[in-house]
Image 1 (cartoon, rainbow, N blue to C red):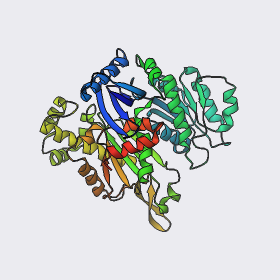
Image 2: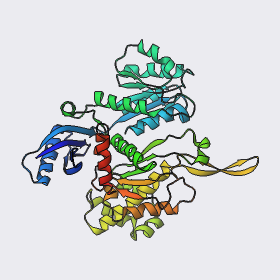
Image 3: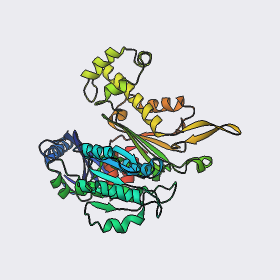
Image 4: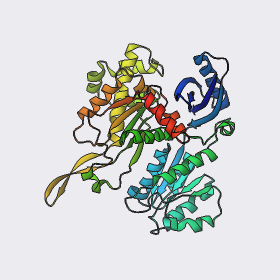
Length: 444
């Protein structure tokens, strides 16, 4: 059998291979899955996932023209971020790193302290991002922070005041990459250059899993972080809907991606909010972090929602596999999935706050305004396999009074073929075909 391309998602635990035809009838053909063989050689897991794909397609031979990949093997993309002012340059760099699929392990503002350097050494990030100063404003803090970490031998991306570029070039350090300022002017986010540099640095330096060097030789385009690929897909969805939110509940984390403009009347007050935003909640997952999610419930809430005691639920979540098999297991995981959605969206979106002024109380918006989102798209196994994922979302939307969330009647779509990450990878080379496939998996 001949196909146009394969897209591999090489995760820390699972390797997925999706097959696509991109000519004529653009279509998703099938999927193969196998456990990622991080401890031996990731190529083994990839080969076995391709073997599973052939089995699922009932074929003996499979030929493909192109091969693409995303990866979160070897623990994903660990990043530390260091800016001048937390709510300005540090925040802008953090948003760009999350946008690209990074896991943020440390954020600092102003000069790096000795304890910060110790923390960086402990974390051993895959890359360090240095920001600070608007263009041609304050420049010494960012430069001095760069000098503090340059000797660690960790890839560094400098995304601060461009007035420092020449003296950084004079340092002649190959592991330092210069990009445009992520915060060139007050309340202006310039995320895309840093985002692209993170992708490039990821491919050039993040080859820790055994066999990944050979995978990099196989691919026909850059390998990008899998969460970043989901954001790429969300960016393409925004072209379709003009305002979109993607919800991804996984085994360890819950990711929320949103792309939307604020209400016209809120624009002036929310100038510092990013147009594209991703949040990742490392404590909200329905497999590895099941017990942490359960701990967010009060005892009376557990009884109300599940009709069970906490000890009974603990018995279920400690025995139920990754994909629940029993009816009671499915009920419990659906309840935990709903909790992940509630908390993750709460942390992602803004709220209306009461403030006291000389003219009395006023209500002002604070945080990301998602009220103009025109579609919510669901991906991730927990939501795709839930009994009624749309009802889970609408129940959350109907309860909120002041949060800046989408309308309760917003259209909700599911990634039926479970291919968002693969389509995000494809969109960087085949945006037209990826958009067709997005519409197909959403059944629109």
